Structure formats: C-alpha cells, structure tokens
Amino acid sequence: MQIKILGCSGGIGVGMLTTTMLVDEDILIDVGSGVGDLSLEALQKIDHVFITHTHMDHIAFLPLLLDTVMGLRTKAITLHASAQVIKILKKHIFNWLIWPNFNLIPNPENPLLIYKEMNVGGTVHLNERVITALHANHTVPAVGYQINSGEASLVFTGDTAGCKEFWGEVNQINNLKYLIIETAFSNAEAALALESKHLCPATLAKELAYLNSQPAVYITHLKPGEDLKIMEEITKNPKTSHCVALHNQQIFTL
Image 1 (cartoon, rainbow, N blue to C red):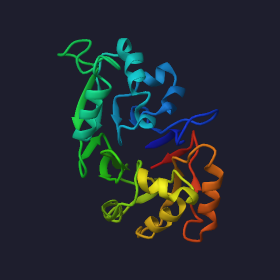
Image 2: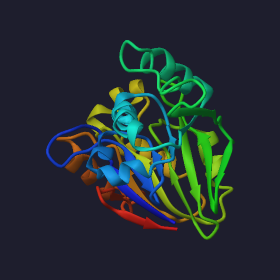
Image 3: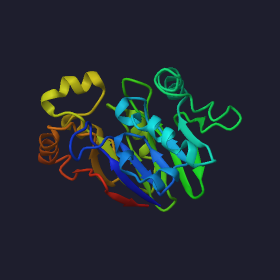
Image 4: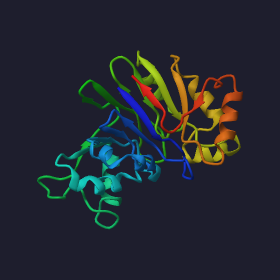
C-alpha cells in the first residue's frame, strides 16, 4: 500500500495545498486543494473518499472532484464519514444552492455519490486495506483515521486538540509505523490554538507523552507564514525534536 501526500498545509499560497492524502490510486483521505494537482485520468480512479471533518480546507475540492468526473465514470464514488459530517455536507454543500446534490444525479437510482456512515471505531475493509475511524477533539464533529495494510499502519489525527481517547486507541495498534499529527499554531498563539481546538508545539509535546510506541512522527497543518517558527519550536523541545514537517508529494509505504 502506498500513501501519497497531495496537500498538508494549513492554508494556501504558492506551493501550499490543503489536506489531501491519496491511498494507492482509488482512495482519498480528505479532499482539500491538494487533489487539484491530480490528472484527469487519476481523478477518474477515485472510488472512495474518507472525510475527517467538514472545515473548508479539508473538503473544498470535493464538489469540484464530483463535478469533474460525473460524465467520465459509471461507478459511484462512496463517501465515508460520520453521520454528523454527512448531515452537514447534505445541508450546507450538496443542497442545490451551493452545489448540486450528487446523491440524486444523474438519477436517484444511479447516483454519482453514495454516503456510508462511519462513526468512531468503525472499520472499512477495501481489499487488503483496512481504514478505522479514531477519536478527535475539534470544534466540529471530527475523526482521525488509521490506515492499515496488515504489515504496518499509518495514523492521521485530522484536526484535533488534546484527546485521551485517541491515544488509548493508538496505543492498541501493534504495527504503527507512521503518525501524522497536526500542529497549526506557534506557542505565541497558544490561546488561539486552545479556542480553535488545534495543537501548538507545547501541547504537541504533552500529547505525544501519551504515545507508548515509537513511530516516525510527521507534523501537518502548519499555518502559512508561521511554519518555520512552529517547526523551530517543535525541534528545539527535546520531547518533540524527533518530529519532522510533512511535505507535499511525500510517499509512505505500508
């Protein structure tokens, strides 16, 4: 199994693309602006989409993806998310006001988009790949995901503040190879991080203290213009000095 990082920034700008991960050729984890760099041929191969939460940087290109491939494929795209996330998408995005309801077109009997509820603890098996929803603590309903090939696992926190339930789940994974964890703000903005339920370097250190294993740790969702400062604060702390910044086009093999 291969996971390719298409976008991992907390904002936009030249070279900065928001959260999207491509699993093999047919699965997306979130659909931020990073998916826009895929070719038309690659976009047509997406069969499954897993959404962590409904903030725009994680779903912005979902409507455009669906609109682009609708006339180019006969098989529906399955969207996996919590019941709360699906409800928000239906009400606020695919409502005919913001974007068409692809759950009804081309026709209700053969829609382009199919929803499948996946709450915390839920697991989806796609051939030899197993994806499990994990706890997250954010300002809107949110989850993280474990992606498991059987040989090894990658865990992505999604957007989250401190979450003891998450670490309880992660510490039960016996083949954890990679952890991708968000840190959106610098320590100078710790109050904003707390209010918006994100991590800063100080709270990252506290959270990683709960981790019992030693996977490679990558930092995502760095705010543009603050990324160097945030990573400097992370690497200067002995408790987090092993963490490195996630990059677009980075590939993980499980």
